[in-house]
Length: 341
Image (tube, rainbow, N blue to C red; front, side, top):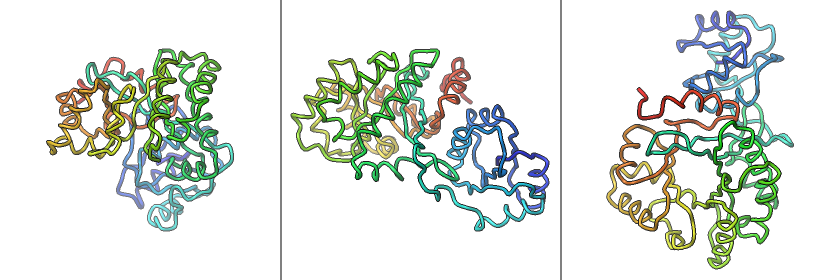
């Protein structure tokens, strides 16, 4: 729960809410909550007209509480009014109901962890769109933008923001951005990626490309040419969202750097011999393997036993704004996952 007046919320909680009430009065307290993945809230209330909160941090905290009902608290409300709101969820505005605002693109960065030494080796850039009451995920806006012919513009904006953010970090971290097949196969793809890297003064080797599965590959020869151009320019290129019995398996002979296992695939590994066999087959191609959707320590042990190189998932770290990413990384430098309680 977020608001400016801790005493007001505490009084309201006593009257109406069995769950703990955690008021945050400053950006520093909010940042700490995001980095520590404080979640499980049933409500997030924001006092109308409050100042001092970074909206990206507020969005990130809301993402950590996916079932929360989010609403704006009228200024000057007393504890009884807040208690009434807490007790009447239907009266609150549900998350994601607001319209898109022009110019509202923002990024989150999800850490990707090495399974060899347990430290962050790169991040995936994930787009969000500023909206009310919280930011929208790509599912809500990317398909519409692609239908309007704005796929390249969106990819360019995400790449520009990601390279600039990575160039400002105090350590040389790699970042991956997602490209749909249509954008990936354009003849100028290597040229505009190089332009964004040069503009940010980020070495090409720190910008990785994930080929998404939103549309099928029709022309394998054309895809292969794009892969060769990107690899020659210094970019790693991975096939994203690889599923069990994926029809794209025939593409593994092309010069990809690696494969990312879809969350559904990762969750099958413990109980499916066929899934484990397919992971070993991918490794036999000499490709690096990253597992998405890691949700427990048991997942990590199973992935390491299969020779999977890297992992990401909410159990390790949620997608974070860049300022929270820096705080999270500093906190984890001396505390990799294998020493976590």
